[in-house]
Length: 221
Image 1: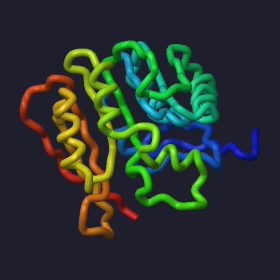
Image 2: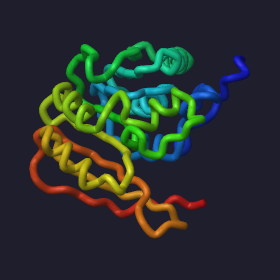
Image 3: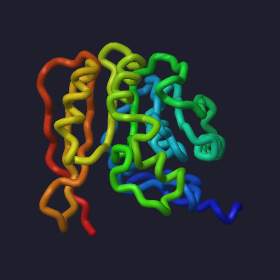
Image 4: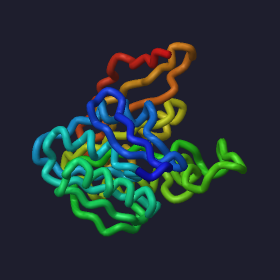
């Protein structure tokens, strides 16, 4: 095996997959989103910024009819393809493309662990380009994500994201502007911090008014 690859499991599942040491890797948010998202049998699922394909592998447990991963970095896209082959998943397509411009079919569910930081925010001079792309909105701002996602989702289709809790007002406003009604929220707390660190959001295209706020999730160290 390539020495730059590791073989690890997605926390909370029995899913093992390959990761690269020098690229963005699965983290707590990946595992939280994999647990939070709801996929029904036969649905078409799109993962935006699929990276190594972890969320597609998690979605596949629910027997979707079709999986699509969009990834702007070719090396990451190839890693996702490798993981699909490793798990014998033949109903998945991994595209190396810019999500904003990609030609994609309509889907029932969009999942995304998007870049958290705006351009220039929390950047480091020695940060690898691949990590900058994963962490910063250089190639995909949240308004751009919402606009594209709304255009692809079928009526009453669902979108699942994990993001910084501090941006929750902005996130919900932007989702609503693009006909994506926030329907379920769950805040994630680090037991050693006073404020929420992350928020999980389910939004429904043209959903009715009303939002469920679930019990908070506490990260235990």
